[in-house]
Structures are given as structure tokens and as C-alpha cells.
Length: 481
Image (cartoon, rainbow, N blue to C red):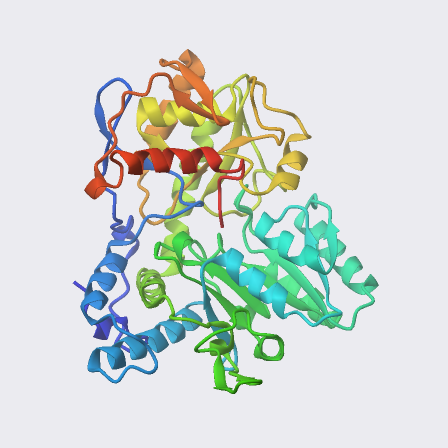
């Protein structure tokens, strides 16, 4: 069990775990799910890139916090004092995890999308933003409200550097921002961040990094990279409690209008004027998500404890096992920006000749108890480029080409990978054993006899109808960042 003292970033660090400590304990590792055949099997979660499971140590940290949870910053009670100190400690811990500079601002947000929208709202009026068509929608759409140069999907890392340099050199604005991902959410490939930062600074620009996928898999040092801003999500980083951060230089943030207007973001309010706060409070109006902040800090501490080099080695072994197994299955085409040998995190996306990606994902779930993701992964221009604009072979597919994505992390074992490989090989060789139909654009078993868990009444009666209605209303983009 974790104590409140353990949550402080200045607490004595625990001894680093060895590589043998991986996989790490995650909530849901012992989950059992029903199949359409009536069997119960252990669940294999290979959808980490969308939402990673909660680390057991993070859940312990939240359990330690909750009895003390109270108002922050102005509460007179002792519980408020403790909660305020924990919130401040969480901010420092997250900054330390990404190697933030001493004068960087660490703003808590809801997620990476929220963080990038905050940065977009804080840009000086004449800023030109340069980004790529290969980015997640969260790192494209916020910039389109102003002057934005959207570069094509690069054919190599070298071409990405050359394209960025040309665009920054040609941009007439006094303020310029290059916005790129650290690791592709579709292919997992790593981007040359240090080189891009050097190019940006050479042309008087700044670099913003979407680290939603990078942070759970690789050590990050903002100062060493030379990144000016970095955004990440707790729900990708084994802390699914609704928190993210924007880390970076404070001058643009302090000069911008507050992201939200309200209590906590001000120094003084009169009937006709307001003096806004500076630093992180300027953009964190309202009661903060203390639980989310502390859980994110706990996840950062756990990953630092095991060592990000050990995390990378664990995932590299799984990635090699997965890719070799997939390459042995006839009809499978793996998608890549820059080729199969390019460095990447634990994300693999593929298509199966003759099968709709949605049908493949549905069968893996309903017949094998394996969770993967299918679709276009909130990266429509990239998916079009990777597939040559080819539509899914099966009828009823989305207008944007789709694929199947397998993603994993610190809670994944070799047994998980092997079970997936056996299932996909069986599916390709023999086809689905069950009938499936399209329902609101998604393949579902027909019929679907799998009983739903009661979850304290959340999936019974009217609540179940409500959930079904919400699912039907979802857009084709199924992978919020």
C-alpha cells in the first residue's frame, strides 16, 4: 500500500526494479470476459494506445489520497492543507518525469487534446504553425483556427526534417511553432525530436511535442530534446483519472487570455476589472482534478522506479515477437510510415486481405476475448496515405480506410502476444465462427449472448439503454487522445 509520503516527489526513491519485474501489476489483469460461445476466458488487453489500464500502484495512491481529499489552496482544515500540498507535489513530479526546465510552466489539463487546445489559444496572434498530415487530429485541428501550414506525410525521417525546415524558412510570421508527435499513434514510429527542435530554433521557431504515445514508452527529457512545449495524457500513462498536462515556456502562456475564466485564475476582481494570475493558475480556473493530478504523478513515479530503459527493453522483446508472428500469417499487411525497420514503440497496425478491420476486431473480442482497436485512429489523412486511399474490402466500411491496431505496454506479457497470434492466425485461416452485423457502423455479434457485468447497477435497465444510445452516437473516430 502506498502512503501519502510516497506521493511526494522529494520522498526517498524506492530501489529501481529489475527488468524481471515486468510486466507491472495493472488493474484488470485478472479480468474474465464471456465469449459468444458461452465460455469465460481471461481478457487480453491490446488496446493500450487508446487507454492504458490503471497501474495497481496508481490505484493504491488514489486509495491513500481519498480519505484526505478536500478543497485546495484556500481551505483552512488540515485535510485541505494535505490536499493542497499533494497537488503541488504532483505538479513537480510530472515536471521531473519529463525533464522540465526550472522555469517551465506545468499546467494540468484534462488530456493531450485539451493541452494542445490550450496552447493553440495561447499563441501570439501572428503565429504560423507548421505540422504534418500524419498527425493525430488533436495535433492538427486546433492549429487550423489560425495560420497553419499542413505538410504532407513524409516518406522518411530525413524528409520530415527537410520539409519542416523549408516550411519554417518560408513562414513570414515573427512567431512560428512546429508541432509534431513524439511517436505515431497509428504506426508507433518514433520521430526525430532533437533534430526537429534544432531546426525549429535555427529559424527562430518553437517546438511543441504531442507526447501522448511517447511518454508511456520512452524516457523524455524536454530540456535535452530542446522541446519548448510538451503535452501528454494520464489515461495513456496508466492513470485513467481524467488528467493531462501541458509543460513548457511560460511567456506565451502568461501573455494569453486565461483558458477558462473563473475562480483560481485571478489575483483580484472588481465590478469592472480583473487582475489575472500568472503561471499555471492562470489557465486552471475552477476546482482542480486533484485525484487525476496525484494519480498521474503516481504513474510517473512508478515508471521512473522500474526505469524507462527497462520499459523499452520489455516492449522491444514483445514487439519483435509480435511482428515476427504477424509476418508469418498469410494476407497480413503491416502499415508503416518509414518501413518495418524504423524505431517504434509497442504499436502495430495492420490490414488483413479480404477482411474488414471492424469484423476482425469484433471476432477477436467475441470469439477470443482479445481487445484491439480498429478504424482510422483519429488520423484520417495518415490512414489515406498509408493505404493509398484504398477502401476496406468488406461492404459497409467507413469512407476513410481502416485497419486493426495492436498496442501494449508495461502490463503485457509474452502469453498475451502469443494468444493474439494464435487467434489472428485461426481467424485468417478459418474465418469467423459467429455471425456479425453492422450496428451504427460497428460490427457486433448477431446475436450477442454475452452477459454484461452489473457494475453496481450502471448497466441495468435504463442505464444500459443510455449507454447503448451513447455508443450509437459516437463518430467514426474511436480513439480520443
